[in-house]
Image 1 (spheres, rainbow, N blue to C red):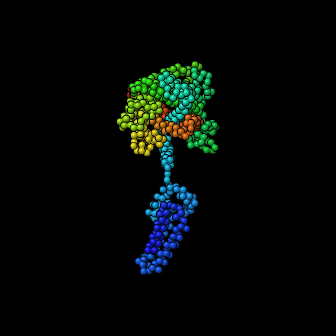
Image 2: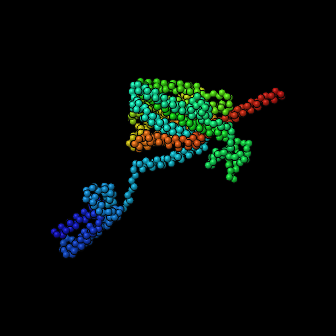
Image 3: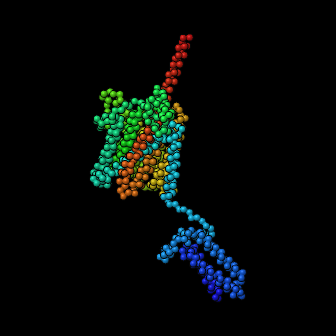
Length: 631
């Protein structure tokens, strides 16, 4: 009986020791706790076996029991080695935590339990948070996207290269214009309009709010015309006697023509040129032969400045018109039905046309008959026409798609194009995709049939309407995908916007490459050339719009970190104006203008070659007729 009680106590002590180590309790990790138990158990079992040989416990049974205990001790030692540094941790602090009644670490208990079950030593896996996973995707995605851009801007086909630079140029311009306009507009609204009219004006205050929106558009439009006039070096009624100093525009200088050199575009002294009578030659710079070319530096600088500020302020005026037209659409009675929403679009188009007609009265005239002034005025008219076409197409296309979405869903989106619901039926986005394809078809037909200024404005509006409708249809589609909803990657989040931008960019670039192959195969089909050109232009605008949406969301997310988001957004506006605009003007816009000019020169050379071939054939046939008549 005594032996049975003693053996039972030893067994319970060993079980408690094993369970304590398995649960991670620190006091059982002390050798001073479990060594006396084993030292007491082993001699006791051996001594009792020798004294009571007559019992059922034979010597072999005791050896088996000792072997089992030693195996248990070896297993405990393995568990101690598996618990990384458990015996080296400060035991007093752990004992105090246990005495204080705190719950044990469940993760460590599960890890030790797995080690007890398998009996092997394993390394704990490193755990990553959702932020780590998101940063990893962003890092690898940025690397992949940058490499794809390098492929596109260095594509062997000149057309694909030109389209790629055009997309980058459009995206940068739209993003910069939206950020600057949004920052200034929000500051004006918060500090001027809201204190005077309230956050949600009604009645007469609402009419005043709409009038303020159109006044803001007129402000940006006047700034645009003044900036173009100043950089084109012409005098207008807006800027009398205020122009840049006269520079010799037609004076050509030798410049470095190797794009891989750091001094690309810099002026080279004429005495270093080997052959001065050509347009391209070789110069010896630092005992090294370098390709050079004759260029009109002042004229190129004027073109770059005028296109930069004209495009930037034109996009800002376009988004100001979108804001003013959105205020009109959300006012009574235009917000009551889709039909009245279309009426508001027509009224906005009429207002823009009237403003353009009034602005044409401010066109400068060449009173002195100077050749440089005539060239400057022609260039001014060209830039003003392009800027006005961009304003009309950008504003009217967006407002038109707003009315179309109102017709499909029965709910008018807000001024930014965001719908109040996130549940869209498949019929909604398929219908909107059909609308985008219809606008694409109309764009191609209009490019071939319409001529003049009205035709250009109509084609540009349909092209941008195709881009807006395709973008919003894709947003509806991505919002309706259940996998994206469950993983919280809908277009409402920054991850969803980036995913949408990458998907649409891949689709657009693939379509542009395919359409360019079709265009190259149709050499003599002028109709196909014009249609495909406008479709490719619409796809380029689509990529610019979708990335602008992602960049704008990123700026809003960063601004939310500050107690005053408007202050941080204004600071970002200043950074954009100081850093992005000069880089865009000197590198991206310059490359886009250069590729566009090279394309026009190739087309002009091709037309001259065809005309020369035709004249030579006519001359050859007339000569043969003369010879026949003489014979």
